[in-house]
Image (cartoon, rainbow, N blue to C red; front, side):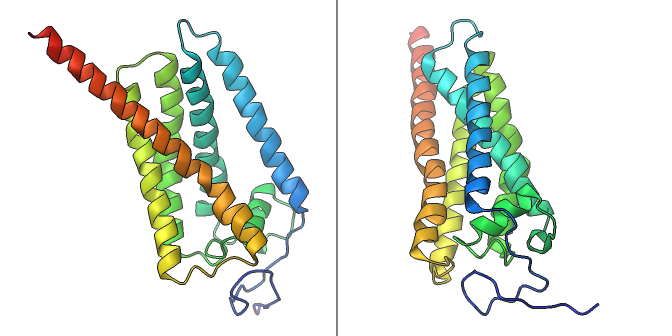
Length: 219
């Protein structure tokens, strides 16, 4: 059966997407479902963390973050990695709709750019499970908790650098409009720049403090 080419909302306009099917769900539904799911995850982990003995409010917040980011990496980003033809979906599969919509902010996703697929693949397969492990490590006060949080945060920041730098080197012209550029390309990714940076700084400090205390005990 011959492939058909239809118009699409992505940039550049000459991007070839055979058998492309437009978004079947409105933006409000796509964003709304993600927002509600996020609040549900955060609420559940917040309640659960309150039952953990002698855990600080900061650690409870971090548990919420790691649960949210871990599930996002595994479920949302994992779908993108393992469903290369999501833009052809003719039925309203929510995850396919997410990436059809997000690609308006960065068409490299719908175009299956190799750098993006690689970054998302590593993120979903390695950083996703590691983020959920961080939830457990904080809750059970494992000695590797800060090391794990530092490692995953640095991994996320490295992915951010690859993501933004490759876009810049390729012309940074992948958004359908300034609206989608700021909403998706910048807005949807800023959390994974700011929060991992803060966690990395905090974890580095905690690890350094532990070494200083250990060293002082020897003298």
